[in-house]
Image 1 (cartoon, one colour):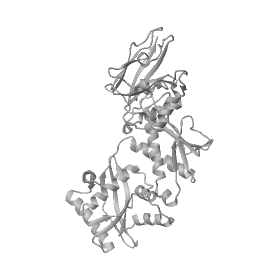
Image 2: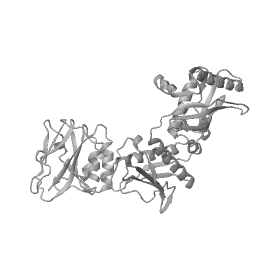
Image 3: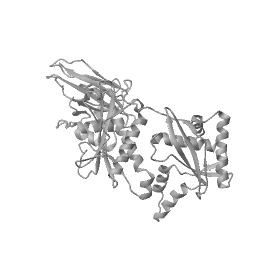
Length: 445
């Protein structure tokens, strides 16, 4: 732990009484531990809270444990065993090329070894503070030392904490219902009556809860791996999927946000959460539920200095030719498409076989004229969204192949991409390092 991080954690630790009393209380407890073990210099295995406690989220419990460890180390008389860091232990086990099965378990047992194990008992919480006692039990189990109540400031992060608890309980119920669980496919969270950025944020929170289960000490010790996958487009209930996770986000007229989650195995519904009211502020997402085209535009990673789309008219009159000015940093590689309100899309740039034309020149270019394409006459009324992704380098190989497969060529029209495929491509393109987006509504009246 760096010096800065240690100071941050120590600053949050508060024991009952004034500063002198805090130091005395901790020192007195360590004196009791030393008396139990018969040693002045101690090796302590700080286990922390019981895994089943519901007072704090897993993230908060880990942060409290790290703060306590930092405070104990500042006493200058103890060393710490790696007892609580089971994720690191798993990583260690996975990285070791061990020939004997028992050697990995020996590594884990050693990480929990010490003169005494320290548990956090009697947890309670009031707003942004948690209280508990430190209880040390000697290696032989013949002596224990219990501290006075400890009070510590916690990071509440409204929304993330509450949502994490809902997700964790759902995963725990799933494991209890399906103890032999080996794989979970996560379907995209749906949003009632539209699309919301919070759907993706909730999907990530579920992924973290499932990952925590996959990394749990029970699964590590018993060699019961749990595979977690994001369902491929249109494959949410693919044959062979053991269990699928399906979530739903909604926003009511009073501005309250709601979430429900269930797992399915075939036609059987497992571990449903029911409808839970959730605060979403801590997720850092916009909870607004919008129509598809508005959602794509609102969530785009735009930077007009790097890439901008400027339609020649808004709206265009029927019978007029399409003309969109594309401006931005010279050398930007363009991947552009037109999206419809029903969630479908058609790639327009680059044209397959003429990819070099889709590299933006200094001063910008007009679509379609400056890309060697024929005029496009707008002869019917519609509302679409013209959208481009800009990158300095080529798209990653597999993603580039997918994009070009759907693109038009000199002899073929562009394929019509279905909504699931469109959403998946948006997610993958937005994950490309350094990507920039630009969108512009194309309205014809």
